[in-house]
Length: 356
Ligand SMILES: *Cc1c(COP(=O)(O)O)cnc(C)c1O
Image 1: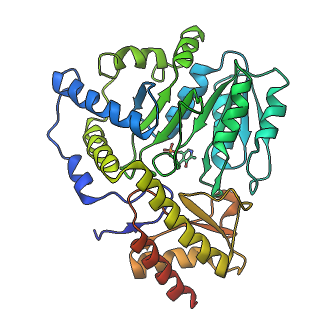
Image 2 (image 1 turned 135 degrees about the vertical axis):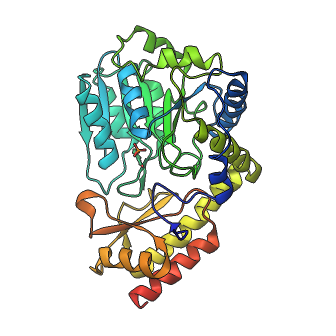
Image 3 (image 1 turned 30 degrees about the vertical axis):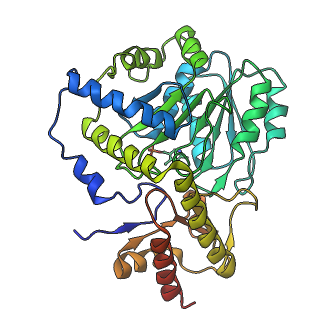
């Protein structure tokens, strides 16, 4: 099969050297070699997530870590902030697990504002709030730092953040912002194959999790933390992924996180300028994502046909709009290990296809 360049908001392109790590001869998950691997990964993850909190590893996609957040950390009632498909999914997960919750939904082309959160939390009904940092369905980056500041003023309310398509592509200052739980799957801006998720869990979150009746056997944070202290996981983890993660984290830190974020910002600027020139950008200005751009199809081009032509003629893939936004928007990801020249090449191919 030919190597196809992925400009999709997950899974993203994985470098061949990282793919090779997956083929490392297997080790046993109760062996000292495994604990060494786990222990090597931990401080690197903490650097990428700007935290001293433990970063737990989930052998699941991101959705599993979303489920772990609400099943372990809501003692009373959860507020689900919704402005897109993934934030709505988190509400469905919360509800589906029988956890008392309310959805606070706004139009999908708008960002969640700190004042909205403040107003909701002022009711005193909630002890946890879920937020999607980077709504992959709409290309909206919610103002996490400012929202976190508001949540901190409501002392007993825990902030749970889905940073799936943002983490490692935009800075999340986990400890400084007081985030209790922040998760991501590694198939987005980490540029690894799918199947593994990570989450940093605050001390007070781990404390509360002990008092919440267990709602899940597999996604039990106190249990995961118990094994974490021995540099292990409760069940057999995706060991091949951990080799790849370890190598990728080393490379990320060698690039430098600030440089990595700058590269994402540069690529975002290039794609946004292209989108503004020929189309428009779906979310409101000021909240455009640093890791993907959701282009508003103001020219009513056939987005499915464009995606197909790009795949067959140029061996690259972008993504149509998500759900109801299919056709009305299309999405170009600029995350992970993609480089500026690759983004420029993609836009030239799109210009070719569209006759610009
Ligand atoms: C991709 C994505 C998810 C779902 O991730 P899976 O790994 O497929 O479970 C959830 N939230 C956001 C913001 C995403 O981008």
